[in-house]
Length: 282
Image 1 (cartoon, rainbow, N blue to C red):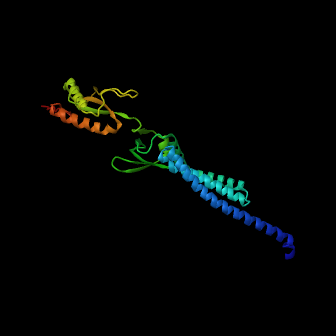
Image 2: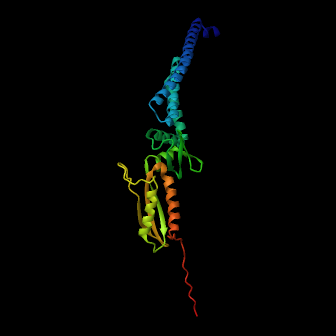
Image 3: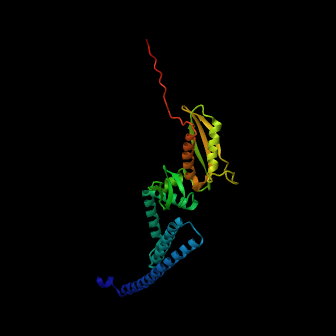
C-alpha cells in the first residue's frame, strides 16, 4: 500500500516541488533583503524631498509613516507572490481585518481623520496660540491622533483631533494685528470729555498702539466711547490696535495706567452698592 502511495512519480513530483519552493524561498529572501534596503533608502530620499520643499515639520512623522506602511505592505505582497501563494486571499483578509478594526476603533479613526484634515488644511500650526474645546494655549505638537498645547500657566493639554477638526476654534496667530478692548466704569456725574481726553493721552504715549490705519486690515486709530449706563456708573470702552505679539503688553498697560492716572486726577471708579431706606413708624 505504501509503495503505491509513494510511487517514483510521486517522489519526482515532491522533489520538483521542493526544489521549486527552495528556489522561490531563496529568491524571496533576496527580495526581502533588497526590499528592506530600498525601503530605508526611499524613506531617506522622501525626508530630503520634504526638507527641500520646506514642508511643515509637523507633517514629517505622518507622511513618512504612511510611506513606510505602503512600502512594507507592497514588499510583503511581492514576497507572498514569489512563494506561489495566492495574494488575492491575503488582500481580502487584510481588507476584512481592516474593516473589523475600523468598527472597533471608530473613535480613534475619527481622531486619525481629524489629524489628516488638520495636517492637510492647516487651520493652525506649531507655535500658534489657539483657543478650542474650552482650552487656550500655544500649539507644541500636532500628532496624528492628538494635538498638544501648552497653556500660559505651563499646563500640557492633549486635545483629540476629531473634535478639534470639526468644532469651533480661535486662532490668535493668523492675523498680524489685534484690537485690545478694555472697559472702564466711572461714577455718574463724571465729565465724559475729560475722561476721553485723559485716556486718549495714555493711548498716544504708548508706541505699541497703532495710530494710523493699515492697508488690507481693519486697523483703525484709537477710539474711546460711552457704551453703557450701568447700575453704579457709566461704562467707557477703549479700543486700541496693536501687533498680535504686543496684545497682552498693551492690555495690561491700558488697565494699569488708566486706573492709576485717572485715580490720581480725582476720577471715581464706582463699585456696586445698595441703598437701604429705613422708614420708622410711630
